[in-house]
Length: 420
Image (cartoon, rainbow, N blue to C red):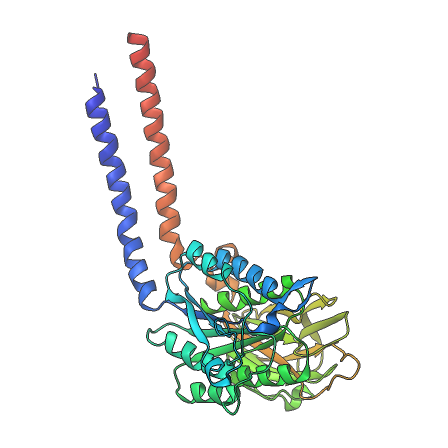
């Protein structure tokens, strides 16, 4: 009969073997992830004007704190995140001192959510708005590493430390060629703030978003932090045409353009038989727009016949509209390998609010990917699992063995009970 000691020894040995089988590849993946970990620093304006109560009945500071807490909860494990403040410590009137008031609230690195939230909770709107100095320091905070680097700047006003122009600081950072992107969010929809924050973002290939509600702020900061975890892709500026015949030819990649209100932009993509075209587009309202709007992405033939479309509509709750489409090009029976030219049309139905300038056009981001068709790439349902298959198989095997083991133990216990 099996003794209790032998049973315990067997269980320990089996569990140790299962743990070793799973832990070794996990450690290898962890080392690889750490070496290329993406880095993000949230740069928050804590100047005195953040006391203003104009965001959903609360202060701008309260909205920022809520957004930070939600984003910290949802930050991907692989992202190394830090927080820097500007205008948080010096309450006086000395401009020279006030323009040095930037400090790192939480260092860039593996995220301890409790510590980071505790640090954010201590913030009180205090002083000046030294955006330029804060951006320089933030770039230093993100120095080193092979992963993507991103600064997310949240501010409710212009820099108060001229002549150091924060837009020039952003251009200096871009000129270093270190692959650092600055995204900006404005809490006040005035023209001067928008122009400055837009200039900072555009200098590094980033985005500007005007935010007037707590939910919008949380969602947008979360999107930008998540984006840092994606593979690094450098957007390519492209000029869409007003007709397919004159449109630029695009390969797989990420492209940026600008589209006037209600305008059409056309692009062309060659799709070989057996391949699939996947395209998505986002159009951002970087200024005040009227509610009820939409974005349409169409794939049509060179003769104007619609193949497939994607469309999205909004009602004022978000200032970024996105949609996408997929078009698989079937294999030809006569072995014809001539690629088909697909015309992509992007149209928006945004309209400018009263008194808002309509130029330049709205920022447009277009992603194009030409991949193997579903019949060559395997079951569509498995798309995106990638290297996760080994872990899935290990978990299934572990579950199976655990079930067998538990059944064995239950039968043994019943046999012992009956014997006694």
